[in-house]
Image (cartoon, rainbow, N blue to C red; front, side):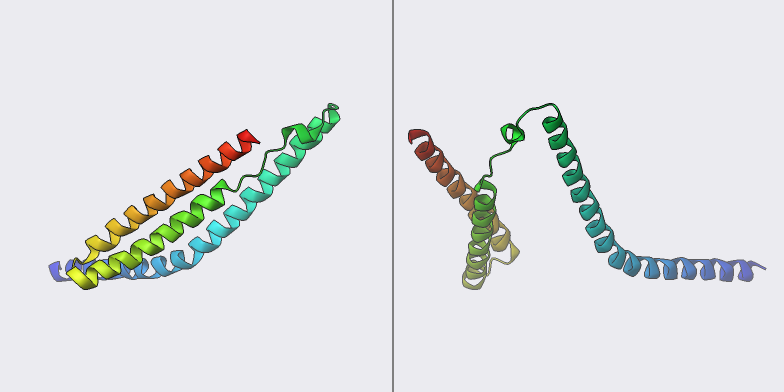
Length: 136
């Protein structure tokens, strides 16, 4: 009798492990699909409500151009310089690892250091643009 209970417990543990082995790959396939669909639905609703807002402004007799947002290139500049800095950081981390055998510490520190330098450079470029725009 005690042996049967022990065997039944082993079977339940084995089934539970098999369930986990099935769930993880299924989630690995479904998660990107769900995230992509969620992003698409979110963007669709954002565009829909922006259009409804614009139509309400027109119905009230106001000019919809007054509420337009100015396009700024600062986001693209920041992202590009951050990625360039991260790439240079990876290169420098590799160089330090090969030269001084520093292991992973070199990679993480150099990525953060050069990524921050890229963001600082983006800030300086934006400030220079803003000063030129204010002077003109």
